[in-house]
Length: 431
Image (tube, rainbow, N blue to C red):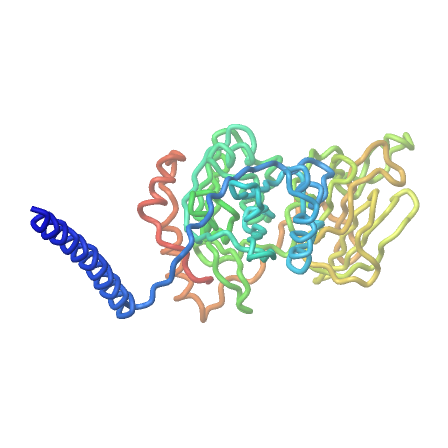
């Protein structure tokens, strides 16, 4: 009986021993197989998961420096110093302006990872953490140049009409410049006048217009009299506007010595009652009432032959032009040119004032030819040269193309925009 028990326990121990040895053997074999598979597998790079970034934005208050703004947004002094140091070589801190937007990105733990400051509509300052340091650069906002059709109607002023067409006042100024030799956009527009044009625009991806490029063609209907312009080039290759029949819109003289002419308070006369001297005497010029500081422009290319104070004329600028013409700009509050200086048509030469013998701020403008004063309001303005004969074929092709892009007369703003989106090509190369 005892022998049978011994044999039974021996059997159990043997089985247990074999089980333990087998278990170790199986585990050892498994580990060797895994090791061989790992050794034979290609190396892989383990990419740590990027930390979550929490963004917050603020508008720059008036009078807050760059570093102070960082502190106000919760950035610690040490990090602020690092950021400022990284920015110095790429950004002028004087361009940090109130009203612009700053956005910062922090980790969940509060560490600054990114910073973005909108410098202007086309550029932004980007700062990114690189390990323990920061990298800063000024980047350009991606944009494209598109060609757009614009149409509108005058219910008040040209500015109002252009704004109602969904455009900025800058486009009104550009349009006024094109027709400034024939139209005074303070006195000539009438209710019901219409305009239409084709213009290049620099546009962001979200459709926001950054700026205007060239106006390729334009039309202004002034109380039934239609003015048209097509962009081409003059004989020297410089951009210039012409009528569809090839005549230059540019005249030797501008229509007004003020960019946006004011009310005429006194006209050319050989017998006018002087409001201060209380006597009748000639007034050989045209008075334009305008606020002090209103810019005064040279009506044509020329050379300054007098710039200074002259008796009852007050501050005076006198410009000598070709073909015997001289122009006078009187009672200026400030003179912006000097004797002997060459000036170009449209250049700012002074500011309206009331120096000398004057009852209020205004510009007394005069023009003479070969020593004889002339009535500027009735003076036919001589045109510049037409399209050169050698360029006629090219001009006619450009004219036909650009004029065909104008929206149909009377087209609504929405229809003009729809036409531009569906029919106009991308901006063409400069003419």
